[in-house]
Length: 171
Image (cartoon, rainbow, N blue to C red; front, top):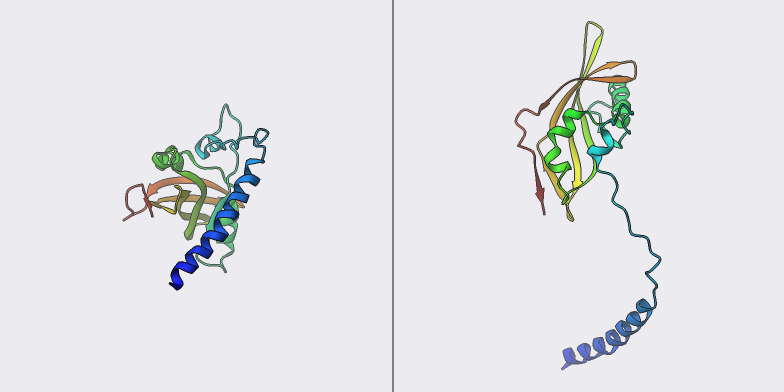
């Protein structure tokens, strides 16, 4: 008997509240609301067109040794560097699929080597995406760069050893 009183009270409160909400929202003028335009796709923005410099992307870079100045310099350069064509090509199946929305590049500096005065930086990179729900990209790309001053030059790109094929896991 007590349960039926709670249900009746809930209905007595919810029905008028929903009716008021319906009246209020029916008065909202949506004719002047501009539609949100989808941003250019990351691959299109990152590729140079007709010799124009590529637009820098917001990258997140994790260093493995916070006390290593070379890693800090490399991380700063990676954060603003345009996407190399080899990376865009490797992840093209995900980046060009309209059901996935690119968010940023997630990179981790794996190692820095200094061989005869030439510094090389090995980085593991994967895109962070959303797919309506949480999504995780499988597969990663290892990139090796030469660090000169505060700029990087890509030497090679290859799939990470033991890495799964490129794909997406969703909840």
